Length: 87
Image 1 (cartoon, helix red, strand yellow):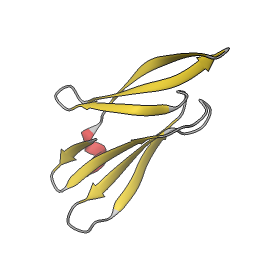
Image 2 (cartoon, rainbow, N blue to C red):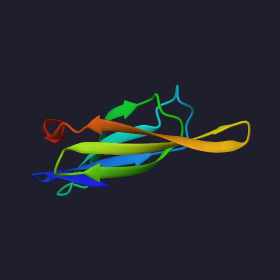
Image 3 (cartoon, helix red, strand yellow):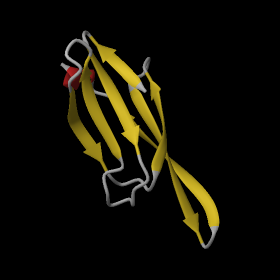
Image 4 (cartoon, rainbow, N blue to C red):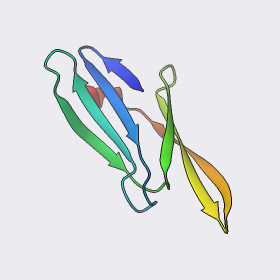
């Protein structure tokens, strides 16, 4: 998932992580040089493995997977995307 700003692109990753661990990472990818820089990390959501970007509203949606006594459930968290961080 990506959001572009001039010659840079945001790259968002989600991973299997406990809620106290950083499970979402935001990188800035320079399309000219191929360099990628870690801009931010976010904890507070367990297993944020499904991400979706709403480019029109500058939002990132993350769906976290949880289980309680063998029953699967989930949560949705939304973040505001600050495009100024890509430059």
